[in-house]
Amino acid sequence: MKHFAGEPIGDQVGPTSNAEQRRKLARVHRALKTLSAGNRTLLHASDEQTLLQDMCRVIVEAGGYSKAVVVYAEHDPDKSIRWMTDAGVDKALLQTFHLTWGDTESGRTAVGTAIRTGEPCVGRHILTDPAYAGPAHDLMREDAIKKGYRSGTAFPLRIDGEVIGALAMAAVEPDAFDDEEVELLSELADDLAYGIANLRIREKHRLAEETIARLAYYDAPTGLPNRTFLLERLEEAMQEAKQHHRPLALLHLHVGRFHEINKVLGYRSGDRLLQEVGRRLALAAKEIETLAHVGEAEFAMLLPGANADQAIQMAKRLASILHDPVNVSGLKVDATVSIGIALFPGHALTPEALLRRANAAMREARPTHGGYAIYTGGQEEQHTRRLALMGDLRHAIEHNQLLLYCQPKVDIASRRVCGAEALVRWDHPLHGMILTSEFIPLAEQAGLITQLTNWVLGSAFSQCYAWHEAGLERPLAVNLSAHDLRNPELVDRIRGLFSTWGIGPELMQFELTESALMEDPVSAMETLTDLKQLGTQLYIDDFGTGYSSLSYLQKLPVDYIKIDQSFVKPMAVSDDSAVIVRSTIELGHNLDMKIVAEGVESQVQWDALASLGCDVAQGYHISKPMPAEQFMKWDTNWA
Ligand code: C2E
Ligand code: CA
Ligand code: CA
Image 1 (cartoon, rainbow, N blue to C red):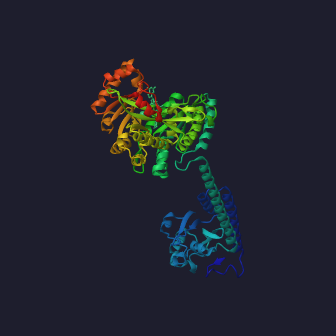
Image 2 (cartoon, helix red, strand yellow):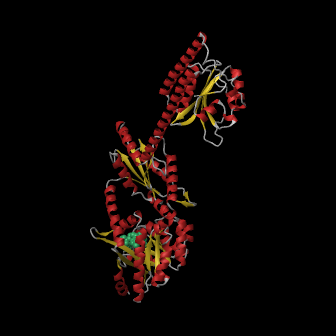
Image 3 (tube, rainbow, N blue to C red):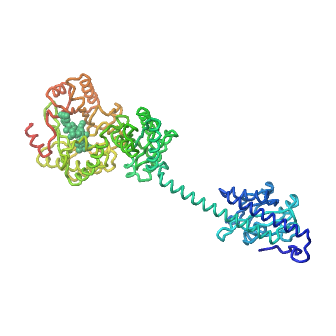
């Protein structure tokens, strides 16, 4: 224990008077009282700052000391001292203190010394003690005179052997803080340090628990609740809904561009897309609604109390909120969401089943139908079949099990064959021929379309070369999907095929549906321009179903418009269809494009198209699609 030099020695030698004895006893008594009040404070402490405040208050109020202070030692270059809290200290005085615990003149204050030495610094006579004579104590001596306190002590606060700060207090008498009192109060300081350590451990545990809970229930890139959280919340919401005989709706959203962006721009950009989508969705959700990030590119929203109508309203709202492009790595990207809706209790009675059904509905959502769909029975079974088929399709592409068919196109005026369309077929070893309307969308969903297109391109080029070698010059048209238009490698690949097979650009053509072009008009235009530069001829396929504007159409570098079969087939019986066919032919001719009618099934249609000046016909009336190797024979017979 450190005592200042010059401390009066009267306490240790000479006869002690009765009065002195009584004062001594009173001091021990107040220290004991402080100690026990301090212990009660420790027991009730819930956080560190409150503990420090309560402790100072108890020292002054219960112990009767004139002031109490807690400071912490900083480990900055100045070894400064942070004033944590106090009781009975003049705040104006505080402003003027620049405390340090460094080994310098200004570090010789009581708290500075206690921190530096790790021993209590006792000053029984502030005004006369030579240790308090230095300039470091000028302010304190002034204050002691003004406030009428005469002695003071600072105790180190130690956690795990390290001094973290000091507890200091002052008393009115000029000779307080004898050995016994200092010993008792040291115990108080140790208790306080123990209490601080305890609270810090508790806080660490709390933070760790919070982190664990966050990891278990929240998702890192978006900060949104995850699937586990949603399922638990859904369980509660279902119970409540059941009790109050109310419905609830679950929306399942898929962000269409996520995988592509991840692949092309990197996972950071993918995350950024998800964050922005999550942010917009969160803005649309009311407080009682739960938004969760439930899969890589998937979000779900729980709408307690909502019926089908309200769920549809919300789906429309979300679709419109996500309509504005998202800025990702300097690019404007359409998020293109599909939304599936499932309702409790109508569609499912358990959280997992409801989520599954919302998911199944989501796969049926089409941009042309608002981008959302409500669950209808059977979607889930279909979904299971589709999943199995996806695996089979990958296998079929990799093992060359697809077939190339082609369907002739005939010039109406001359009746001459003017080319053929390449159409892919899949003869599944178990299920037989799978409809293209089933497996093309499947390939798009499964991210297999690039591989499929590559297979078709390879086969079409090789077929075209074979005809060319045999003396038959027939352009073959390959269908490209919306996905292909966004594939930055497509054009290079096609260029490579031309040089590999050495056939002229007039022998290979490309068909792109109007709706694929409209999905992303800007990048579609770029790809078309590049293809055009190779010297190939291009078709707008399924014209009339894709809502393109005349001004966009005018700018497109295409050579042919293919009128969709849904207008051609009924043109003999429906005036509306006949009008559409006629005006499309006129429009195309005004734009210097040729017109192909597809789905021509009868002589009546052929004649009608001929009289309207349609250029080319394709359909069962001429020929059904046939295996590519039969085409040459058919061509010869037709002539
Ligand atoms: P599409 O490009 O409009 O192809 C024409 C579809 O109409 C073909 O169906 C063809 O068999 C059918 N069709 C032709 N003439 C008639 C007719 O007179 N009556 C009727 N009822 N149908 C006729 P398919 O081969 O099942 O293809 C369906 C769609 O699948 C195609 O529509 C095309 O969008 C897509 N598709 C086919 N092959 C490929 C391909 O290799 N790549 C890509 N990306 N899509 C393809
Ligand atoms: Ca086509
Ligand atoms: Ca078509």
